[in-house]
Image 1: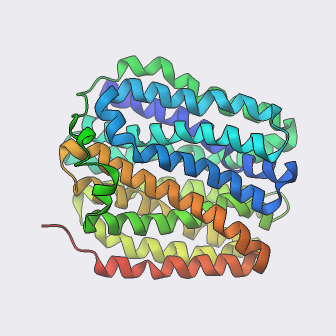
Image 2 (image 1 turned 135 degrees about the horizontal axis):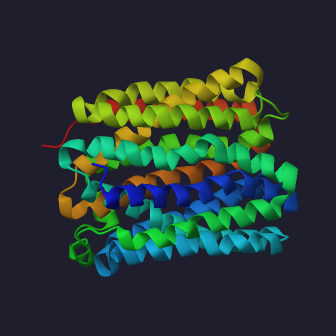
Length: 375
C-alpha cells in the first residue's frame, strides 16, 4: 500500500493541512480583535467554508478537465500565497477577502486528496488507506490549533501567518512524483455532477449526517477559544489538543475496522460521543477535557466511516464525485456552524448554544435509522 505516490500524497496532505490547521482558530480570533466581535469571528470561518464549498461543487468538472496533479498544484497555491496578506489586512473586510481566496485552495486540495488516495490504494485496503490519509490530515489538529494560539501569544500574528502560508507551498515539489490515471471526463457532462450526486438518497443521507457533525466541529474551533479562558491543560488550547489526538487515533482505527467489518455500525456511537462531548465543553475544568476526548473519539469515527461509505456508494469513475460530496459536507457544515452559532451565542451565551448543538447531533441518529446499504 505504501507506494511512492501514496507516500508523497500523504506528505503533501500533511503540509497542506498543517498550514490550514495552524490558522483555523487564529483567523477568527484575529477577526474578533480587528473589530468584528464574535459575529466577525464566525463570519471569518463561514467565509472560508463558503468559498471552499463553492469550489468543491465544481471539482468533478475541474478534475475531468485538468487532471489530479495540475489541479492539486493550483489548490496549494491558492491555499498558501494569500495567507501572507493577512498581516496587511487590519479590518474585517480585507480579512474576509483573503479568507475567501484561501478557501478556494482548500476546496481543491481536500477533494483531490480523498479521490486520489482511493485511486492509488488496493481496493481491499481502501479503508486503511483512507485511515492513513486521515492521520496525515488530522495529525496537524493534534498540535496546530494549540500551536497557532500559543505562537500568537508568544510571537504575534505575523509569524503565524508566514508559517501558515509557507507550509502548503512546500508540497508543490512533491507533486511530480504522484502519478496515477487521470479522472474520466464523464463528470463534465453533468451526469456525475455535485447536485446529481446529492439527489441520490444513499449519498444524501451520509452527506447530511456528516454535515451535522462538522457543524459542531465548526462551533468548537471558532468559539471554544472565546468560551474558555486561561492557559494550561484545562484551556481551549488543551481541549483542542485533546480533540486532535483522539480524533486522529479513532479515525485510523475506524479505517482498519471498515475493511474488516460493517462501517455503518460506527455511525450511532460516533454521533452519541460527539453529542455528549459537546455539552461538556463550555464548562471548563475536568468536564472540558472529558468533553474534548468524547468529541474527538466520535468525530474521528465519523470522519473515516462516512468517507468509506460515501466512496463505497459510487463507481470508480465517480471517485471525484464521492470525495466532493464528503468534503462539501465537511466544509459546509463547518461554515454553517460557525456563521449561525455566532448569532446564537450572542443571544443565548455559550452553554445554551453548545447544548443546542448537542441536540442537533443527537437528532442525526434518525438518519442512521433511515440509512440502508444501496442495492
